[in-house]
Image (tube, rainbow, N blue to C red; front, side, top):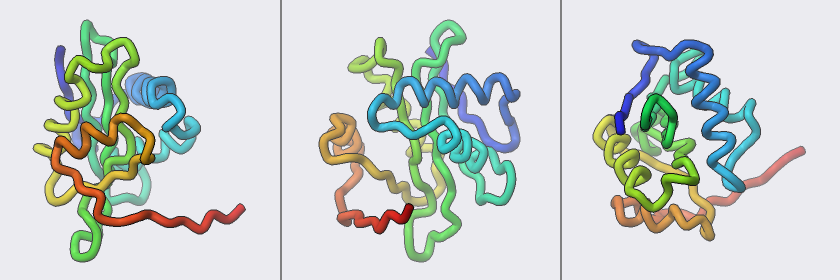
Length: 146
C-alpha cells in the first residue's frame, strides 16, 4: 500500500483528479455529496481558482485508489481551525483494515494547525475520529435556503 499527499505543487492530471472525485462519490455512500460538490472541494484543495488551498491524501494498492481524504484550508486560524477535513472515504472492500486510521494519521501529520470536520451522529466513522483525538465541541446548526 502506498500513500500520496497531493497539493497545488504536485497537481494530478485531470484524469487522476477525476478518479479521486469518482472514488469519493462512490465510496462516501449515503454520507456523500453530488459530484460537482466533491469536484469543488478537490479544486479548492488544489488551489484552482480563488482559495486558500489545502491537500489531498490518497491511499493506493496496485495503483488503485483504496482511500482518500480532502482537506481545505480555511484561512481563519484566529477564530476557527485552519483546516477542514471535507471528505474521507475508504473503499468498501477495505474497511476495517486500518486504512482510514492511517489516512487520518497522515492527514493530521501534514496539516498545519488545527483540523475540524463534520460528521453525522450515526456515521460509524465518528468513533475513529474520537479515537484520533477529535472532540465534539459544538453542535452545528444550519439555516438552509432553497
